[in-house]
Image 1 (cartoon, rainbow, N blue to C red):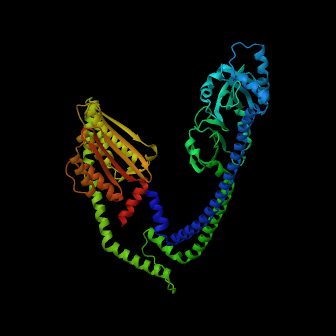
Image 2 (cartoon, rainbow, N blue to C red):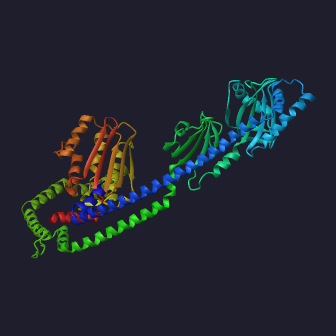
Image 3 (cartoon, helix red, strand yellow):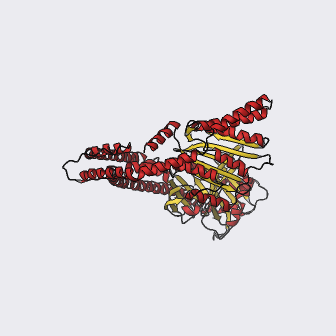
Length: 614
């Protein structure tokens, strides 16, 4: 977010010509996009019309093909009644119950067998032609390719045959299922069935004595339906019965079950929501109640327009690029008029407020800008001389006072003498402690205001080692410092007051798991250093008091002098965008985060020198 804000400030807010160029470019882009979208919409609309026509044609041809199967069954049933004498014998044979199949029965069954042979060869799609005799529950079968498993077939369809009683007229459609055949894998079939009416010595034909069923090869018909599909629009053709069970499915996904989107496909819809948004066209058969449906996903439609869409997009992009180039060239001609203004701004950026823009005799807007700029520079110089320079000097004095509160020369020399005496006396632990303390004071003697982060961390390690000796190794310190920030600069002795607060106010001396974590990482153009402990922490009221003090930069009390010192030093050096933040919870510890700009030691020193010169 900060980066975008900076880009806006640098490229737009302060650049009128850039804003003018962007406004011009946006207008051109909007116009080009409008015409491109219009062309694309018309292309897609034409493509959808073609897809709809392709679907309608496919389902009409599929429905006609399926109606031919209905007509085949009706013709087969009608053939039973064409020859009255032969029909009577066949109907009488189908009406009587046969307990023992004798020679006479075999003779009477011959016309039926011939009839089934003829029926089975009526259509290449027929797998089996069979007659179920209700009197005796006998099954007479003629299979074209292999032997039907009669017991399995009868067991599966007996419920349907019982339902086709004397009052049932017309045909029934059994959806596709897997049927067993001898010595071969099961084959998917669907069945059309119709009643055979008649009886012994009757002429009324009002009683159902048998059922003619014809099993069709689902795989073959699905393959033929697939040939009806336009390759330009790879759709799925479905035939569903009136309960939504699948008869034909060219995708081979939904057999032996109810189609999951049956309610959505019962009507033709341009944007039905199935497993994906699709265009649906449906024809409903009033006679058998089945639905012939074509399902075409929108993705398949839009895929066909990809080349056209890409061409339009390419032309639009080239037009936009041409418009932008033309705008840039025009702006560059205009920019020549403000060349001197740009040069003057660059001078001001490096601190030279003495440069003035030459004023020509042209009295236009650009000349007015030059005049106002010169007046602004005069005002800035006057302001610096009278007020701002004084304020900078005052801030510098405050910064120096905060950082230079003690002169450690005397203490360092004294500690060196004590260390040598302790070493001579054989007390190595005391000597080691004094050596660490001497290193700390030696670091304080150096006059650098800024050091590298790695040097500041080394100083903190020595400082914490003293406390670790004091607390008998009850203090554990963990450093999580990203390697790429170690070379950046930091204000000297910036972390020590925070660590001192962790130990003095947070440490539990009689607890063995005192833990301090020092984490350092880079965030965009800033360096973040977080110091957290698991000590006593603070309650909400105390924490809120410290946060208010940080926000207002109040004079610190004794308990907060360390963190306020660090906070004020950072803000005085780098501005109000930087500083210190704190979070804490009672008995859970305290976490302090320091934010500084990511600059090298040399850059910080150069900034300080520029700051000193005013």
